[in-house]
Amino acid sequence: MCGIVGYIGSKNATSVILTGLKRLEYRGYDSAGIALANGSLTVCKKAGKVVELEKAVKAAQLRGTLGIGHTRWATHGAPNDVNAHPHTDMENTIALVHNGIIENYAAIKQRLQKQGYVFRSETDTEVLTMFIHSFYTKTKNLEEAVRLALCEVEGAFGIAVVSTLEPNVLIGARRGSPLLVGVGEGENFLASDASAILQHTRNVIYLQDDEMAILTKDGYTTKTIDNETTDSIIHEVEFDLESIEKGGFDHFMLKEIHEQPRTFKDCFRGRLLASEGTVRLGGLNPVLDKLRRAQRIIFTACGTSWHSALVGEYIIEQLAGIPVEVEYASEFRYRNPVITPDDVVIAISQSGETADTLAAIKEAKLKGATAIGLVNVVGSSIARETDAGIYLHAGPEIGVASTKAFTSQLAAIMLVALYLGRTRRLSQRDGMEIAQAIERVPEQIQAILDHSSQIQSIAKKYAKAQNFLYLGRGYHFPVALEGALKLKEISYIHAEGYPAAEMKHGPIALIDENMPVVCIATQDEIYDKVLSNIQEVRARNGKIIAIATEGDTRIAEFAEHVITIPNTLPMLTPVLSVIPLQLLAYYVAVERGCNVDMPRNLAKSVTVE
Image (cartoon, rainbow, N blue to C red):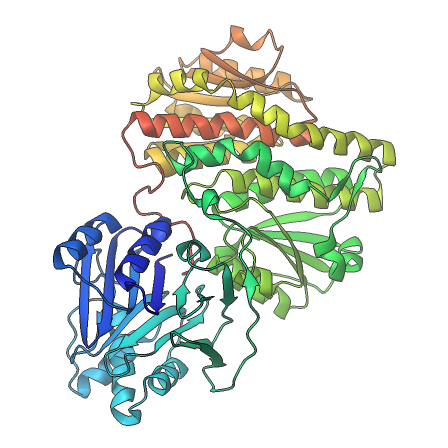
């Protein structure tokens, strides 16, 4: 959550920072602000989106060569001008932007108030700014003041700090919230995401927890907050500017939905050995023996990633016969889970920075489990914390509502399941059948996308509905959950996903002629059971939108609308059945006039608990 950009160099920092904030706005859009420290400290901040800040900055004609900027997802304090970042000390000499939560801010605030500090906002960030100032009055050194303050801070932070007292230095630090250094020529950058600075440099250093970066325009140093110098490894960003632009689509979400034939393929490219019916997972080499011997697999994730984990539970148990549990990361470490050294814990996170998932992994490792990460962002915290992992290779996902990351997660899970199946009880022939079916999935996704106009017309019909129900059984229960989540996230319609057979145990009371019910009813071993559930809905006048297999001639008797998907193996159908649900949510949200890419109250990467 929250986007941070910092710049020191010879260019106009205002332009660099504003451009960066626009690219980071998916991380938070409650308010935005900028601070320039050249001669004097100039701060401009506005509630609302970055465009409001841009108007104010242009009106004030702000310029400078050292500055920091922030786009906010509110934690402490309402989203208004006063609580917006950057925050300054009382003398207006130090400015700070912050992503995370300072857990002991109240105690620090009381301590500072006794020293005469007066606070203007409701934020923990202003407390940290004043705290740094209190150390500066003693040390007269900004780097030392920041370091000493952070040694006493509890909680999570990614910060950027500038001061008029030291106008040739930009300082950053992190613990639990992402922050990287962008290395340029005669200029350097700070950012919470490489996309913010990609047009200026592809060379980045991912800061570790409790690590600081001290930047000048000509160089940088990194050290721990305990004042020990650290080695900096420069990584080259793999994606390019084109991948973070809309590319002619009206929204990032629609672009990312349409990218899925490619992103799904990119995940299994070079890993799937179709002729042998198995896979090669180089990223898991350090733990392959432990994975093969695992007595239990535990998935931990949040939101959409949790839904992909549920699909993983079904697939791995079917192919490999290994018991699988799926845990909400936000609950995992707080219930003293029973974990043994024979367990493998797989964390799934698009950003690789999800705070709850990162905490769950640390808890699992503490109890002796092997930790594997399925993440999309190279250099992310979860990628570094786990013992091994698989990168999704989906490219940057800008739309807050995850789409291509979900199907890429499914691709990675399928590779793990196929590998485990082949090492345990799956024959080469069966492995080849699955592998070849996986290879066909990209063109099958494209076939669904080619007929999206039908889904758009259905969305128009039901865009004013107040409630939706999504039903699925077996592999499609997690897809029902995901379809309902997508609709809730971007259209603000109340929606629930249920196992179809559970409808009779409560939700059926909600069904009437105003209730659209999305039923995933592909032709598999429980097809007839799902048809019975559909007829129960029709008997209560519910409006059926069915996701069915191509060539199914029976389903039309029971549904107002039928959206077909290509036939594939049952375990692969979630990748296909979710595509119409993503499109349905998208078109409903557009019809309702919602901001699809920036839904209210949400942010892309949840880096606070």
